[in-house]
Length: 204
Image (tube, rainbow, N blue to C red; front, side, top):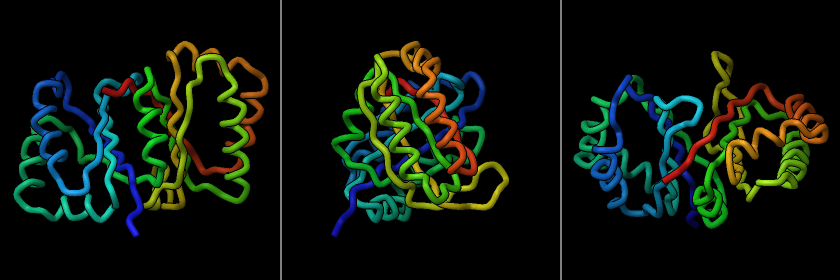
């Protein structure tokens, strides 16, 4: 039985590179692959040299097949190589396709990776999201496990979890951090993980 996945790709661009021009032709290579469902992309608000792709596949096996496809994959990386300063960061998420699609279509999305999740994490992250989504300007969220084990910094690899939370604006998200219940739930969550990374993207 197929399990839909969302592939996360983070590209680090060379300084002053224009990715908008070649993006359409490069992404069309991905879009013509068997098992492809949807692609959204955008720059990190915190670091414009970072570009993030969120690619939905019918199953992870279709993405693996693409990486082994020969000509198409070589064509993609031949186009990407002059643009990027480092190898792409790639991993996969188990998310409900309809939910993540709705979130990525909203004005701005907060993207959080939780590394080395431990006992009690599920309860803590569910509580944090329940508290946060009561905030003015919060539109929805999707979350789920990362298929691969990930390392935080130079540490050992471990289980990871991903959340995508959509907002009306970055200002609405920032205002939420002033609430005491949000801070308290966040502190509890931090005690259940080995580290985290958060950024924001306006997807197109």
